[in-house]
Length: 319
Image (cartoon, rainbow, N blue to C red; front, side):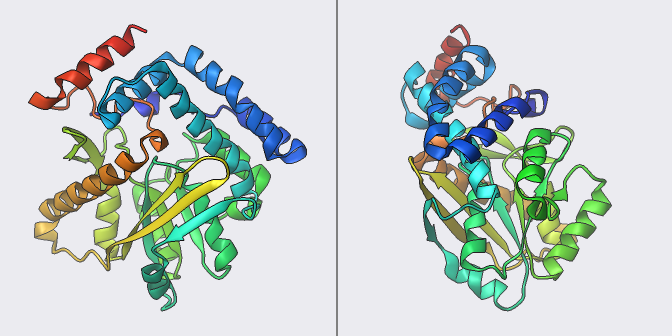
């Protein structure tokens, strides 16, 4: 099972986030963006496993052998979204040019007072969701976040916007407590946002086709959706360079209502459908993929058409 990401340090350390936050707030975003180049170089030099994972991913996603320049572009894209967290979480969203698509179904649910689950991924920036508060201040977004694993981000959020920090639902709490808090938020009409692409150690998973190979996806978010019978909307916040983002909402289900006896097979089918959609969007924005580890895992079954990509990954590990 591919759970290596839990053993790797956060992509943005406390010091790096503090430095970016300080320069961004007092020197401006333009000056802070100049730091992205040395940060990218440092990341490429010092974070070998992530560099190798980047090139292996891009070789697969681009359909050719990824170069070091490709990896640098990948890391720079990641660093740019980390910088923009300072402004997005701080409530300074007007400086960004965000194209929003798929709001009709979202409005239809929320305007009836119905809460929903908002399923995101480590593809692009989830924080760009904050532009919704500019358009509709009456909307409530509750983000599910593992505070213990994301200490640097949690501290950044506490410093930038204590009001938003207070709405975070801690994913590190016990299962019944987490379920109850999510249920209460949905029943109150809130959007509860979760990142659903990574499999946690020890969690139940379903193997689903993803870029030509079976990858593990966690069952837990889908089990929550089935238990709550809540609507599910997919959300993608894709960084397009400069100050431009695409924020995309896609209605995935008006309510997952599955008899308990059929739940396991039905959830597996939902996950495979989700993985296919995630692959479609990731192909359109491969440099927005921010899972810097072997997403498929060493135990994933091999297929005949993946040998070239695996050869590329082996070469990358020797760099």
